[in-house]
Length: 184
Image (tube, rainbow, N blue to C red):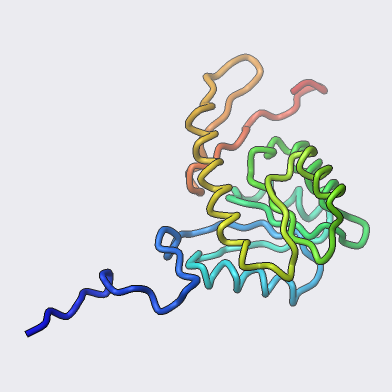
């Protein structure tokens, strides 16, 4: 009699199955003004096995507020929103001491020169909205890289502040320094 394979021995029915993300919690801060685009991003991540909790913001004030209230694993930002864009969102991350959070730009259209400028400004990756199949692998890679950076860069307390590993994310390091009297 043939032995029936265990479920873990069977190949996944879903070709987009990512074994290492199945059920992985993901705290996502989304900078996106179009609700249907936000849904597509969430569906792509959930299809890959992430259990996503998220907040969606459309401007700098909303982003600052979300960063102050929660600890995020990744930021996914549209390139161009009314009165706000990915460059401004990167600046908000830097201003709030959260520049170590992986930042991925997802856009309907972005030129190569702009993409390079975004990467130089601190974005970790970018992809087109019509190619969301790349999103989960990009998030997985950036979370892995953030984990490596956090273990390689745990800084001792000093007079200028300290850093800590977030207890709410998968190894994400968060700078807890606050500006005092105009100094970092």
